[in-house]
Length: 259
Image 1 (cartoon, rainbow, N blue to C red):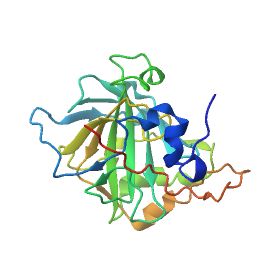
Image 2 (tube, helix red, strand yellow; image 1 turned 45 degrees about the vertical axis):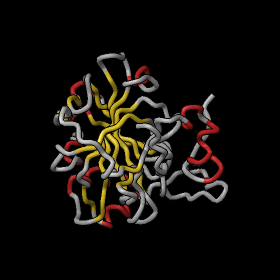
Image 3 (cartoon, rainbow, N blue to C red; image 1 turned 135 degrees about the vertical axis):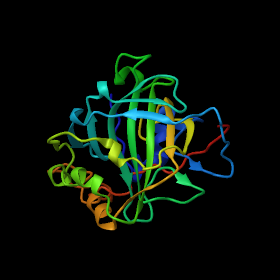
Image 4 (spheres, helix red, strand yellow; image 1 turned 30 degrees about the vertical axis):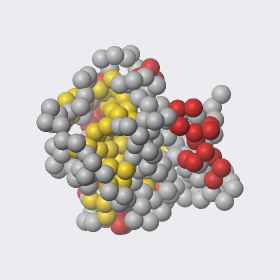
């Protein structure tokens, strides 16, 4: 049986540990990255990734974020902290109600306007994304912090599709495909990595996180377009005082414990 959850009210993040057993674990994500406590590991090399733009075909509104699905057989992530080949499954983002908050990971306590997640699954050990999701070393997620600055042309093809997925359950094709490489920082050599979890329920502790040190800029006008998406379907109304517009769809940082 599925359990309804949200980012607000009595089904919001503070209630998830009581709703999903993994959400109260000691390897939860996101976390606050305290740069002074991060340990340099000289054995970690650069990440290697190659994405096939033609296989990025559809974008939808899940009621929690936008979701770009990928047929990722030819889109692989390797290297860095990873010991296996990881196949791209999808990407989505989290953002705030203003330009000052919205990222899930924070750096020395500071928030960013949004955070992009590229979700990959371990195809060496598992037969499918579904099989990999709950398992140790099952997933690898790239986190890209988004800050407000100059306009980012690479984002416009995705943002231009948002009017077609305004409400939960809506979806549309991506004509000509899309290469998410253009959404990554120009300098992708420096990153933080740690063992963690999904940041949305059921919060399985199956993720190797790689959060790039360099943020990517979007304009304030571009960020405003995210907030025109809706948490609700076109025949629904917001319940319990929750916002209808999709804002503040991020989980706060979780305790680091002994990681």
